[in-house]
Image 1 (cartoon, helix red, strand yellow):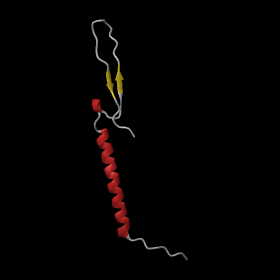
Image 2 (image 1 turned 180 degrees about the vertical axis):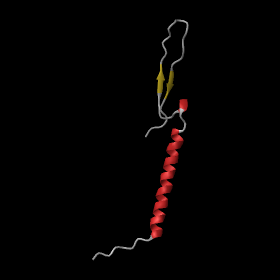
Image 3 (image 1 turned 90 degrees about the vertical axis):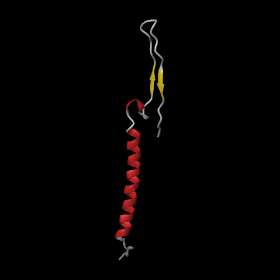
Image 4 (image 1 turned 90 degrees about the horizontal axis):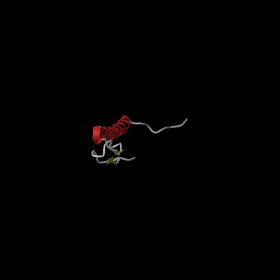
Length: 70
């Protein structure tokens, strides 16, 4: 017969609340990062080069670097 140490309910609740708080914090950070969206999207980069159809119309090239890396 193996005697196990008793598990108290308050310990289980404390661990559960700690895990939930950490998960909520991480999820809120991800939501904040992804909520930027549109042209301000920090997860995508962009390089555009323009070749004019006519000699008199010239547009500048565009470049946006990825801001967030994991």
